[in-house]
Length: 388
Image 1: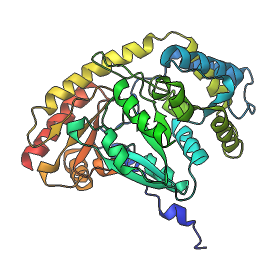
Image 2 (image 1 turned 90 degrees about the vertical axis):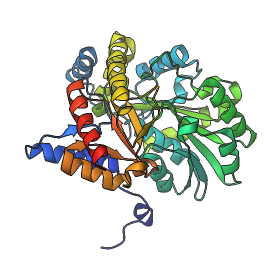
Image 3 (image 1 turned 45 degrees about the vertical axis):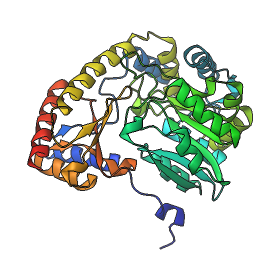
């Protein structure tokens, strides 16, 4: 039966998952692979979180929950958003989702009509344009540059707007660049969004992973007016190393929150019941795990930065957040997919091609691995760059 929906034909497979799976298959065959492609923390989930999830499972918390999440978790998220982000929400404005990816998709689906335009700064997280396409919208990709730290400028935002513009997506700290928008930069973008009543989707999943004294700002905290047009997305995957638990959440004004809950009612019903109790423990328990993880990643970040600056024919902007480097490779004369294929097949180093993020002259390298793997992987990458 050849009647697959036309919207599916518009959507590209995830190159990040494709490369990761290819590297895993090589390892399964016994090949030594130096993985610099990872998009998840390599630390284990904290023990107290695992114990809480297991205890909830054994206690019989295995049934449906309210679509937007268990009341205890939503109440704790209200506190977290107030204390950590300066955001005022009530529990009815929170929706716990099956991962921050689902949170982003729910938000887009709730707001975007057929033909609506969504402004997406590039480099972007791989799934943003595909989510917009699945919702019937039109991704409007705006290329950013190293000169602006891989961040969209107010002038670019204004020039990209049309009467069909419905939303702008802001990811700070960003994947794949590690870029962090300052409060002033966010305020300038927010002023433009307010002038045309454009919804802001603020993806803040990497908020805990910041370095060198950098600070994370939630754009919705800057004014009541911005709060009213912003959907804040966050989750537990990165800050608490809970990628497989699939827990994220949206925080949005009442009408938008109700729309998101309605979508959840008719899709996944609710996030996994006992996993939500693990998330509750993550928020209420000891937080030293986060500072320890950030300290470890900062060591790796500094190591990778030093090594990359020694490698010829590439350029790099120092990231202040997340756990990636976005490396400009146009001087090597290879487009990113070809480059990553050669790097993996010949040098056994896994990296993500920049085309997945909207820039074909770059690659993404991750430091979610040990210093030993980083050292050998970067040595091999240097050999590749010198030979090309």
